[in-house]
Length: 199
Image (tube, rainbow, N blue to C red):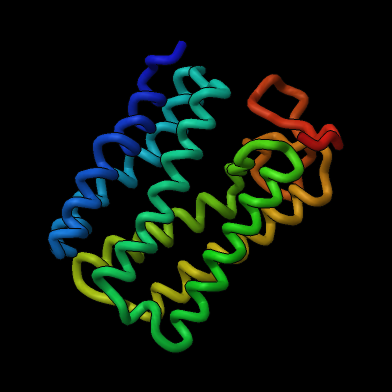
């Protein structure tokens, strides 16, 4: 079923919240952006939880969630550059570059090996999303908080390294496997397999 509650939440994050957040960023209103970012991030937490609770986990929903998540992440980095440029300076800038680079590497490796955006919903990613979301909200509402930034960037780097390791080591990966320490599930939840073919 396409029009279920989890998919509607993911779509709302993509076509309702993102344009509104961009408008606030362009207008130079970081506090309002931080406030509106809170419900946008809550839809990210709610769509996956509801999909499992209502037994509405679908391949389409997983892809829609991944597109919305990745678009929001790229946008958030742009908003930081626009409204909190201090995050680009010195060690913070280096750490941000490393974090974004590892994320991009994971996305690229997933595309090369599996011909799709392999957005793994690992426990490390959930922790990273929580800490990163807290940093973004605080940064836009109150200003740049270095210790929270480094915590969020470190969590992001570790999550990306786990994703890269899984994508390189395994020929079949379940998006909801949780951790590198768990074997791929045999259940029919969304998964993808490396075929070794090019094209």
